[in-house]
Length: 429
Ligand code: LLP
Image (cartoon, rainbow, N blue to C red; front, side, top):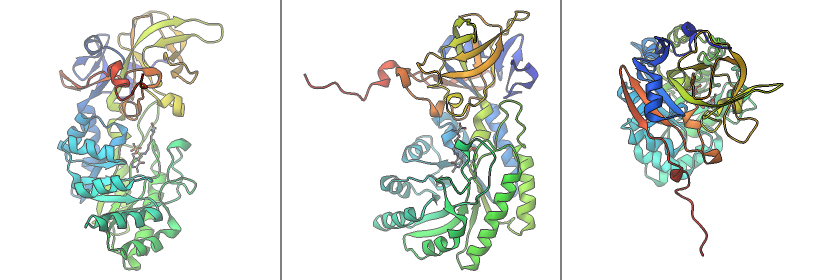
C-alpha cells in the first residue's frame, strides 16, 4: 500500500513538492546525497509543534513536561527541548549524562525505571535531580540508604500500577498487574507511609504510566480516576502529595491511527482533574513518542529487487538494526519513495534489509514502483528507532540530520566501522 501524499504521517512538515519529498524546506534527496543512507532526518518545526500542543493544554497550570528521552536521546534534540522549557524523564545514568551534556536542568529531571543501580542513584543525587520515580518496595529502602550515605535527601514519587489496560501492544503495555512496573495499587498507602518515615527520602509526588502508543482517551481517564483515588487515600494517611505525574504514552498516526491531539486529550483529563478538585496541583507528564515520532523519517536506498513466486523482495540498505520496531513489535511504518515514478507500474514487495534474519523486514506487502538506486523514506521514524539502533551484523549506525526551515544540521555523524569495535581487544600473542 502506498500512502497518499496528502495523508503522509508527519504532514505538513514532511510532504511532496515538485514530485520530491521535502522535510520542511529541504529536499530529502539532497540530504541523502550529502550524508549518505541510511539517514535519519528530523523536522525541528514538527517537534516544536508537537510540544506546543502540550504547552497549550498546560497554559496557566502549574505543570512540567518531562520529555521521555528514551524515544530519541540525540543531544541536539535534548538541547532543543531543554531550550523550550522541558525537563526529562530518564531511565538510566547514561540518560542523565546526556541531559547534562545537552545543558538540561537537572532539577527538571525525573528518574524512572525498575532497576536503578546504587551508582546511578548516587549520580542522580549528586546532580540534584527533581524526583526519583520509585518502582518497588526494595528500591525504596536502597534509595533511602544511598541518600543517607551521601548526606542527601532524595525527592521521590512512587510509581503506582493503576491496573488499567492501555489496549496497546503487550510489549509496550505497562499499567497492568502482570507487568514488572510500579507498585500495586493495593500496596500504595502502606508503601507511602513507610517511605514517609525514612529520613533519606522526601515524598513529593505520585506517578503512573500505563503504556505506549495509546490511541484512546478512555484508559487515561481510568488512570486519572485511580490515581486521584489513591492520592485521597494517601493524604488521609497523612502523607502529602505535591505533584501528580501521569506519565506518557499518547500514540501517533503510523497507519490510519487516530489518537486524540495532546491538547484535546488534556482538556478532557483536566475536566476530570478539575471536577475532582485537584486542578491546582502541580502536574507532570512524560511524553516521548508523541513529541518526536512523526517528526522523523529514515532514508534508505534500494539495493536489489528480488522477484519471487510467493513473495517479491525490495532489499534496501536500512535494516532491523537501524529500525527495530517492525522486527520487535510487527510495527507498521509507511514507506514512500523520495521521488515517486509517476505512471510506473507498482509491484508488491516485502521491504527488507541486509541483516541475516527472516525477521529483518521494514514493511510487508507494500505496493511500490521502484528500481535499484531509488531512495525510500520510512516514515514515523523519529521515536524508538535511532535510540534503539544497534550494531548487529557489524553495521555502523546511521547519521542523523535536523532540519530547521531551509537549513540542515548534522546532529550525529555516521558511525565508522572502526567505531563499532573500538572497545574490543585482541588476545595476547
Ligand atoms: N514514562 C515511562 C515510565 C515510560 O516507560 C515510557 C515509555 C514513557 C514515559 C514514554 O512513553 P511514550 O510517550 O513514548 O509512549 N520501544 C517501544 C516503546 C517503549 C516505551 C517504553 N516506555 C516502541 O517502539 O513502541
